[in-house]
Image 1 (cartoon, rainbow, N blue to C red):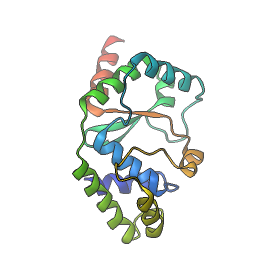
Image 2: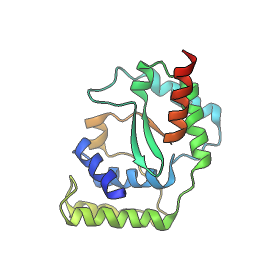
Image 3: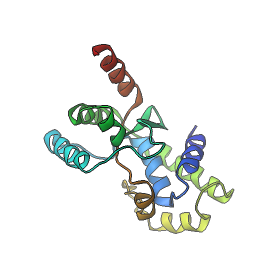
Length: 176
């Protein structure tokens, strides 16, 4: 249920801003937000990003479910576990190709977020969400994390299908 997933993320990330919640709903509905036209470029960008990462942050799990069969695969724990960027990129690309979203479901998610904000269940004020949504383009593009979120949590992940990831991890365990 979307509301439960949002509440979980609000408790894990109390510095979330409206755009971070909208990003989460977007990812939950549409999966990886990037239209991947060039797999080699996606892999190069991933490798470059992973080269800058350190050890996992306290409490950082390998992945976080976001609903709709998707999860955020955290890159720092991947590094620690020796998961190669090539495998992460393959999971990411396959997930991007497999997931299609629905604009109506996305907008229903936004309405659910608005209800939570009105009930003071979000880490931000309802007026902050109203202001963000008033500026959100009508074509409903993906958004980036807020500066506050990036500074507090230093996000480094890829959205992938959770079952595909679990199958990969099980196969990897079987290889050892």
